[in-house]
Amino acid sequence: MRIVDSSATLGAYVHDVNLAHLSDARWDELHGVFLDKAVLVFPEASLTTQQQERFSERFGQLEILTGNPLIKSLYVCNVDTEGNVLPLDDDNFRIVRGNEYWHTDSSYMPIAAKVSCLSALTLPKEGGQTEWTDMRAAYQALDPATKDRISELSAYHSFYRSQESLGQTVDIGSRYGFHRDGAPLRPLTKTHPETGRKSLFVGRHAYRIPGMEDEEAKGLVNNLIEFACQPPRVFQHTWSLGDFVIWDNRCVVHRVRPYDYSVPRIMRHTRVSGDAHSEGAPTDMKEQPSN
Ligand code: OGA
Ligand code: MN
Image 1 (cartoon, rainbow, N blue to C red):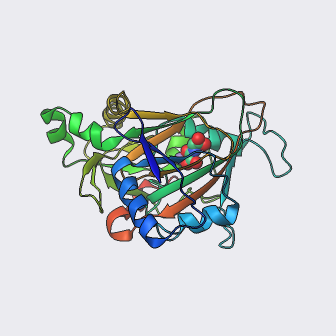
Image 2: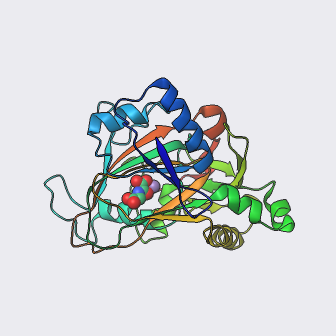
């Protein structure tokens, strides 16, 4: 196994490893590198669906994103089930477009995600790169006054609110991520359950901070994201077909860059559930949209 570090504070490329046949010793080694680097790229790993699902399950139980427990992979893509490119005003496309804003997966769920895994199946010629920001390094870089200011603050996270801010209104509970039991309340800082490292925990889904006017809260959240997502804390990957990437949602945010929406972009996504004791959050029915 050969590891090549990126030039950012996170991210590495892993060569010469067969993810479909991984010994326990190799897994332990890889897991250690993952906890340190937070994002790992396996160039042209070309995993099958089953191989990706099996490998992802090394981290823990997969989140069911499709509503069908037998289907563990989600296609993050701009095409319908027949392969036709979605029109710009399609609801599914608008949800995929939401990925262009810095976020961490499932922060709007009662249990946020641990790890996400993505395989590149169909790519546009240009654009569509994915970027990740190191929220550990971002936390470290904050000035002491800001660290102090945010130390006791929490934010509500909601997929309704983040899609709404992009002009989309979604029916209550009509699909994955649109909760019925109120929004989860998550501290703005997080201690990683495995490394003990502290990081910032904010992204596009955070919309309200108890004890603060919404405008001020949104301003604070946006300022933190803008501060965090700067070099050398950002790692960008330009995809090749078959590339496989895994990232640690507990300490990074990510986004996809724009591309030509008239051509297909298809990624196979598997998502590992967080652990209730470290990624669980209380939800609040007062934070439930009423449409
Ligand atoms: C995701 C996501 C970005 C991309 O799958 O969770 O945000 O590059 N994807 O498609
Ligand atoms: Mn995502």
